[in-house]
Length: 161
Image (cartoon, rainbow, N blue to C red; front, top):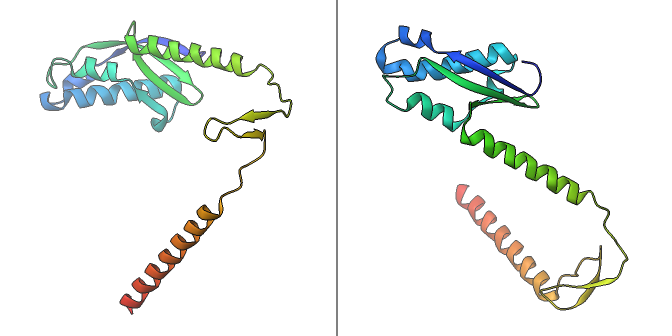
């Protein structure tokens, strides 16, 4: 497989040598083996899309297709198998385009003047980078919870002895 995308016709003729009740499982296994052979990918890095799975299992586990027109897409070390002309591959393309758009938007430099900004919760102004100081009540509640947990742990230890 050269590049990130390749189209193949995966033959499933060997699946017909197995008993009828195991043909669909064998077909999925053959698809994985084909992808493994042609992409040199590890078995853990091969993903079969739901569309391919549904295509194989469509009629039943006994009657499977003779071949699968597939598109293999490689992302890093991960290889995904799609049906040629399927909806899932289009969805993946759309997501990739959205990520590129977001990446371009985030690449714009952000202005940091150090001016005070109002928070929505409090309505108070704070400078960027400053953290709120916890209230005395919150600190007391946390301390009480910790003490309570310690007492429970000690009680459990005493029960075990």
